[in-house]
Image (tube, rainbow, N blue to C red; front, side):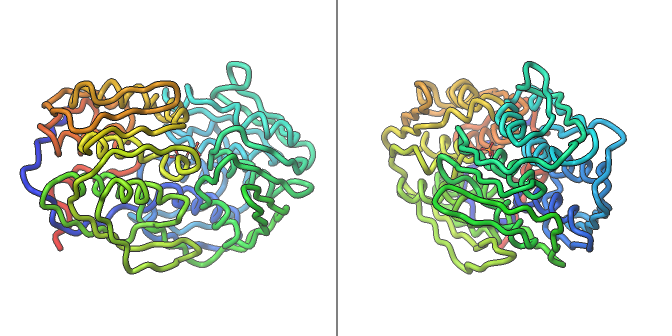
Length: 428
Ligand code: S3P
């Protein structure tokens, strides 16, 4: 159990945040497919990305780690000796299902209690359409999942995805690398496009028309020598929200990825009245990065949903905290996907956050409603083993009357140094 005390002063400091989780996963996977050595810097050494490292090592990649740096050499994929364990990581599992669907060897996946409950039919169904022999427990819905050796190449398919999911899209693009003919994936709304960007950086041929992405089979990838991973805007989100809602704050966040498929949180907070400056914009390896300046601001409630949701799906718990400090009501539509994240985040937000600010959070259908400005209390909350719930509860308590959380350790999934940053930060 961890107790977070209320912060009595605004945050006035510079903060460096860890490497982007999504880009780190993709760097490990794609670098393992080339034949040369790739130096990955500022990689996120959180538990999720370490699950990807372990899986790629089991599949034959040579990966040397020194803190936030990796040296990865692809040696051709081979059959793993044991079951691959994706831990808590949906990205590890779903991307690797796509990659391995076309391989001539057998793979079985498992994961932790949370991942074994999460829906996998969204990947299994289209991979079966492409000709993969892939089977999951519970009528192909859940882990454990086994992929039988591919007897021939997968078919290139055109697949209209029922939900906007970067993980599903990426799985199909990776499967498409080894298919017989091009694969086209059509998204209902644009989700993060790190896979597309990195595949192109590795020499794969892709075409994008509207929400359709077509990948041409490319068996030989040409790896770049270096990949530098920008900081994770999903991790920065906690400091962005905390600085906004705490009076007297002036925070600089250094080296944040600002790929526009990820910056929905900045757009929403700005519409709520937040003062956020983006400066030092640059591009590195096809990904945009920048520094951010955040000042405390008076927020007002707003209503949003639709296409912006995939651009901020992981930031909704943090945004819900911001909305609790806003004047008026915030309504967030189309957030049904929150039910199938590391925990049911819609239920978790309503049940746990209301302990800090009673009668503030409710859910109707796929919408989350937050009535801002209610009184806040000290509370004892449960993270439900969800890293993003833990960090959102921590900033909520810090900006209110304090909080205890039962399992602080789960932040290691995406932000191992989170609590150290809250106490010490990096002084400007
Ligand atoms: C991710 C995609 C998102 C996100 C997850 C990471 C990725 O999931 O919630 O934390 O790296 O592709 P979905 O694609 O399932 O929405």
